[in-house]
Length: 168
Image (cartoon, rainbow, N blue to C red; front, side, top):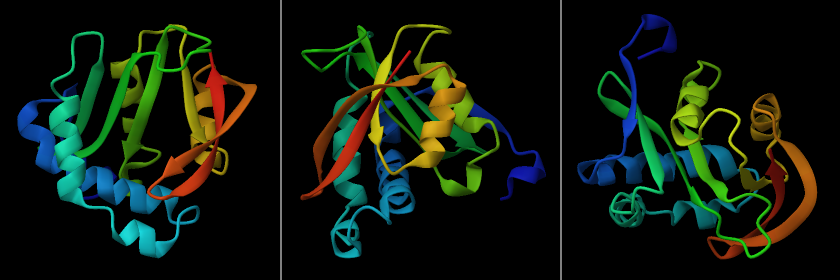
């Protein structure tokens, strides 16, 4: 299905029955997003089943967590999650944990719909993103974020990624 075919697009809260589909999409998004940052051998070990187990946990979080899925013609193609800040030195009370969208749906406006489902307009927020992810940097800048100078090396699948912090 192409983005030009006028598919039915829905962004809705994650449901526990979504875990398996979310696991598959999550694993594929990691391959599409991090193939230039993480070794192929490590990425090949990303298990959709393990990701589904994580989603079973995340879907059961309290109301202060906002987890939404993007569906195109009934199939999950992306997801977003935000919730209470996890860092001791958090620059805002709310953190955007993740937003992923299958590459074929980039530049369709669906990423913005996901973002809007996870946070309130103008809400103070922060997030960590790979330093070498210019597409994400442009997206967050368009949404009012700026780099605050903080960075960290984050363990990721047995390797490390340098992350930078965006704040709005």
